[in-house]
Length: 267
Image (cartoon, rainbow, N blue to C red; front, side, top):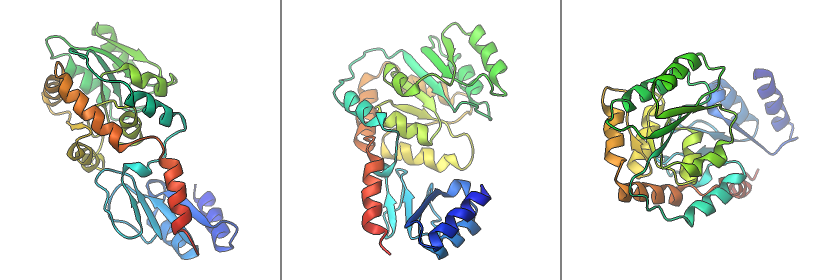
C-alpha cells in the first residue's frame, strides 16, 4: 500500500496525473500531507478533522458544508446498478401492514460478531420476524452464527457471495452498520436500524439517525428489540424513513462527484 501511494504521489508531482483521489481511512496523515504538497489531492473522510488536501469528500449526512468540501450523501459514489435500483424503489409505494422480512448484515466477516448479539436480541421478541443473515463462511464467527441459525427457526443464512444489490428490494427492514452498505441500503429505500461496530462508527450512525434516514441502536440489552418493536407493525414510520432514504441517495454520486472534481480541481 505504501509503495502504491508513493508511486501515485510521484506521478502527481511530475504532472502525469492531474488529481489524486484516495480514502483517508487507508492512508496515514503523513501520506496525505505528502500528496497535498505534490499537487491537487482529493480525500474521502468520515467527518472532521479535515486535512491539508485541496478537496475533501465527506458524503456522510453530518458532513460540514465548508469551502473545499464536497459534502453530503449526493456525492457518495456507488456501483452503477444502484441508480436503476433507486429508480425502481421510487416507483414502489410501501404499504405493508405487517413488515416481516429483515436483513441482518454487518459485513462479510463481522469481526466483532455483532450478528450474534443482534440475533440473540431478536429472539427475545414474542414473534421474531423472518430474517436473513449475510456472513461469509470464512468469518471467524461463522460457526457461532450458524449454531444460532440452526437454533432459531425464523432465521436463515446467506453466503456473502450472493448478489446483495438484487436482494435489497426483498426486505422491509435491515439491521447493519454505517458505512458504504448504509448508502446502498438508503439508495434502495431500505430503512435500517444502525448498530455501530466500533467507536468511530457511533457519530456516523448518529448522523444518519438525525437525518431521519435510519434509526440508531446499540448492542445494549433490549436496545435492538426495542428499536424493532417501534417499527414492526408501523408501516407509516417505515414508509417515512424509506422516503427520506430515497431523497438522500440516488446512486448517481459518481457522476456528480466527477463533475464537481472537474470544476474544482483546476491547477
